[in-house]
Length: 110
Length: 114
Image (cartoon, rainbow over all chains, first blue to last red; front, top):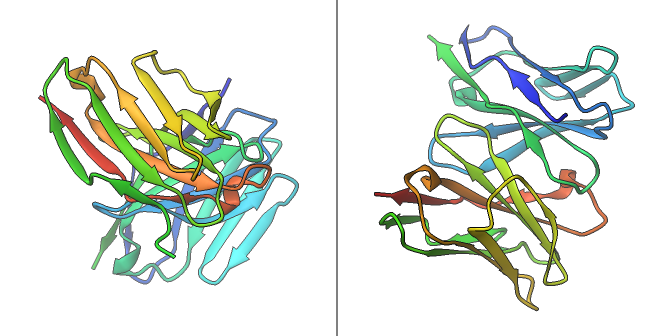
């Protein structure tokens, strides 16, 4: 089946690291994604990882993939107030439909 | 390049009515996918159009139909609107044969059914 699960809320103090976790079920997924959605806005692709990779780092973002456990995580270093948003974990095969989780709302504490 | 543009941005309709939403893909993109995002949920795939034909379809009833024009723009039509059709409708464009890593999403159309 196709399912992506993630926790709904996360509160983090400004300057700390945020870690958002996700599990998925489709073992044939070729791409795993993290999207960001700010209030009233569309979806912004933050980063992605190909299924044969374990880790990808892009500035403050680190993506870890455990393919055996079908677990994906996004770490945001030095979390800022501008990082406050909903983060969606997603997966797809090539240009096939994207399957999204319900989103994790990241709240930044001062 | 304006990216992916959707119109209208907001729309209010009455139960039982029909609605048409529009999407212009990013320049150079030939494939359009539509997603429905209900409040508090992640986007759900409705269908994808390429070469003016429906290429893939998600788990949505036949009340949801679409069209793609020769210039690659697309329309989403919903007939016999239900209150549960209230959602943000997102359009994404990409190049057929590429990957969703190159897909761009529009800002969406917020549909409210009353």
